[in-house]
Image 1 (cartoon, helix red, strand yellow):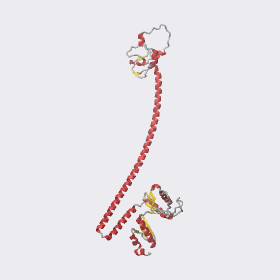
Image 2 (image 1 turned 90 degrees about the vertical axis):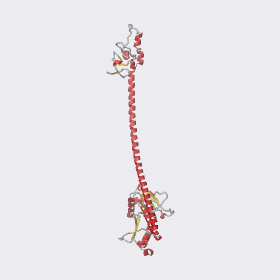
Image 3 (image 1 turned 120 degrees about the vertical axis):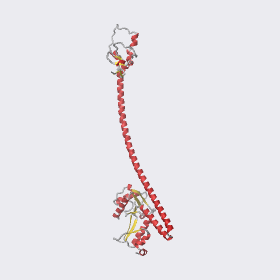
Image 4 (image 1 turned 45 degrees about the vertical axis):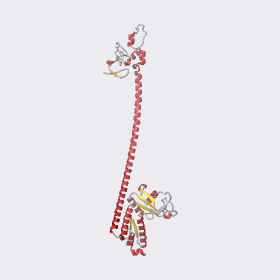
Amino acid sequence: MANKCAGCGKFMNPSEGASCSSCKSIFHNVCVGIQEKTRLPAGWTCPDCKAKRPRKNNDDTPVKTTAARELVPDTAAQGRHSPASGVTGNRAGDSSMAEELRLFRDTFKEELGALRKEMQEIRRELSNVSAFLLRCDKRIDNLESRFINAQKENNKRMEELEGKIVTQWDTRANNNMDITIALLKSELNDRDQELLLNDVEITSIPEEKMENTVHVASLIAVKLGVKIGEGDIVKAERVGLARAGREEAARPIVVRLVRRALRDELLKAARVRRGATTADMGLPGKPRRFYVNERLTKTNRQLFNNARATAKKCRWKYTWTRDGRIYARKSEGQSGLRIRTEQDIFRVFGTDEVDTNC
């Protein structure tokens, strides 16, 4: 059976070391200063037991021979240098060191746990940022794809229209060229008008320097009872040439919204609250009535102005626009007639009536 050395604390075979006849402890030979293959005398005691044994002044004690001195080393010297004499001190030092190591290990575990939590939090935040950037990247890709598709469609349309022009030029006489060009212009105008289906035009709003037109558009939406955040507005800007010193000639504000349904809701609210003014909106100047209408292309705007002037001259009751298309109706209960070109004004209102006072 293996036992521990009382000197160094390591396991050993009892038959391979020295055994104290007093305390029955066993030692490695080297731990008690015994050379290898040295024969121990009967009744050998360890250095600790020798140190505990009371000393007597006995004159009959024989003088140690040289052989005895060689066999049994000086106990005083061994007491100072023998590992057995320092067993208790070594054990106390080992216990203190083990306690320090345990405290260090616990502190290290706590700091490592806190660091691990911080790293997990950083990973979560980085994951959220990555997801957000991925969504933005997808939206940008979508916009780029839509833009490329629209550009391709426009190029295709232009090629088709150019092909039509070439075909018409080759197959028809010169007197039909004006009709073809007018048709092409009308188609291009309709295409341009489709690109403005998310836009509205706000007029009669006082203009000032360094104004925030997006904020002004949001105030107008609130005034009309429509909830529109600044995130719902793609852009808002004044259009046309600035005319300083003429408050009544403030440039219109063009607002592009993210969805057509939002534009339709704003136009409907403007019709319901017809006559709304800038009162209580925090805008400069006196309260004045403002108007919210569909945004038209330059061609359609001129055509609508001519149609309104002609309708007023001919005493037609209604002229309006819907989705960029111009309509006129003489009185209640009659169907509306669409006006696409200047020639349609003569067709709708009558050639003789337009030339005269209707």
